[in-house]
Image (cartoon, rainbow, N blue to C red; front, side):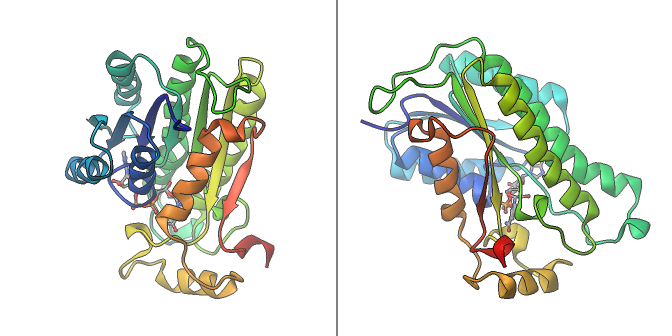
Length: 264
Ligand SMILES: NC(=O)c1ccc[n+]([C@@H]2O[C@H](COP(=O)([O-])OP(=O)(O)OC[C@H]3O[C@@H](n4cnc5c(N)ncnc54)[C@H](O)[C@@H]3O)[C@@H](O)[C@H]2O)c1
């Protein structure tokens, strides 16, 4: 029996952690999966990989800009229309932004990072919660009581500790952790679980190439006791655990997947 008999929805699924999470749901037996991103070509590529690991899968591909409330609402409604429910939602879409101190950062740059990394996650989790409130729990893998739904918001180790020249990014990620806890308190009585995952330096396009972050990334990797980048799969595994009924008593948690960075 699969741990994922329900419907999954993943944002930011065209690349990196979102792609690895989408493929993992397919691999672990989830049969109905909605994926979204602003990058449609990347989404189709993700769907192709998902079909390679699962022949019986039904995938809903949607191009969505996480800055747009109407598009986000439509994304969840379309998943409901196609599959009838949303059980596991992983809100992965995010941007790194530019590397500036506050006095060199424009309000436009600040809004861009905040609107995708924080407001966009709030909008998508709000839309997912609204649907989960209307549905009954599915059976669980061992007969324990299940939840009406499980949401995982992707934050960052930089929501817990900080770094130089990234005020908007760090603040948005801290906000995601805080919002996750607040929602977890509010929706526990309705039997919905909301957690977040805080990745360290993960080997995705966000941390590759010659970005303004390169030097800071190398420093962070050197600080982390495990002294390497994580893989998108290692973050996806944490997301799937938190979505599964094996995490039935995990609520409002910020699970750090960072090779020990924040403990050092
Ligand atoms: N890679 C890391 O080291 C790391 C560390 C901590 C947290 N994170 C977080 O993990 C999440 C995934 O990042 P990743 O590393 O996989 O990066 P990535 O760049 O590979 O993936 C991010 C995805 O988000 C999508 N996206 C960006 N803006 C969007 C928008 N407006 N609307 C819809 N989709 C949009 C991109 O198209 C892309 O597919 C992000 O929230 C990021 O902040 C990453």
